[in-house]
Image (cartoon, rainbow, N blue to C red; front, side, top):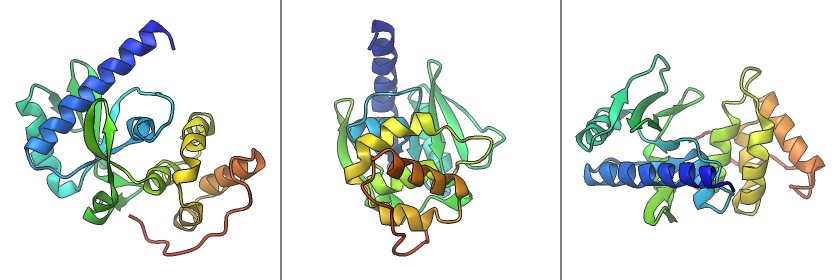
Length: 198
């Protein structure tokens, strides 16, 4: 990794630390998602921003908590997240994934893990992969970016659950086939369990 990449990673992790402390202090329930969650779970750092999932009910408290520690906040036109900025570094507060609201049950499944010298709740690996696959579409279908992260997490993931939750998505199904063909998964995945998520 270049020294520039190290500096970017360090800055993002510092933002993660500040934001998670602010949310904790305000009593906002959250879980780390995205590339930072993959990093906490052992994937190589590929960190451009910090993603947290929260319930829609907690959005106002979360924005207020981050404003109170010096973040700038914004409500973009998208109806599934709000944003905060720490000296230009982006924090996404996601409250809906592919029209599915973030629930307390999802947040309860998050596991406390070390990220940037702080312990934060990190999305359970199966939920993390589902959160990446559900939004795939013809306009956003970057398998190349997903591959290294999913490869690093593969032994932590319940692939049958991923398959059943994402069964309606041709893009997710194609990605699972790609994982099989590349040998990341040893055999075709049998969808099993409850398709409801989160």
